[in-house]
Length: 93
Image 1 (cartoon, rainbow, N blue to C red):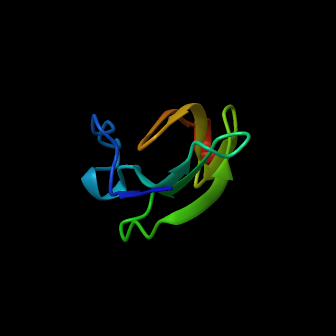
Image 2: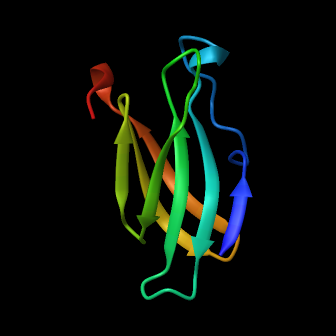
Image 3: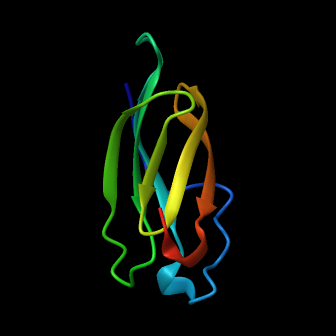
């Protein structure tokens, strides 16, 4: 397992509500030797305190939603996870 990278790179775009509301994704770990490979991510979105929620054992194509954002896993490698982050209209998830 590869552990804890505190944020995404490149940085995600600033929310229209301001920096305090910008979504943040963190990598808590990957397990590439598992079948299928898994990733543990944190997501903090649309709240000024940005307390993260953890999503464990995500696999390729998995989706997780929080506060109107959906994250979809597109690749899992040792120490790296690629993802799409979509903001839903009207905060729906």
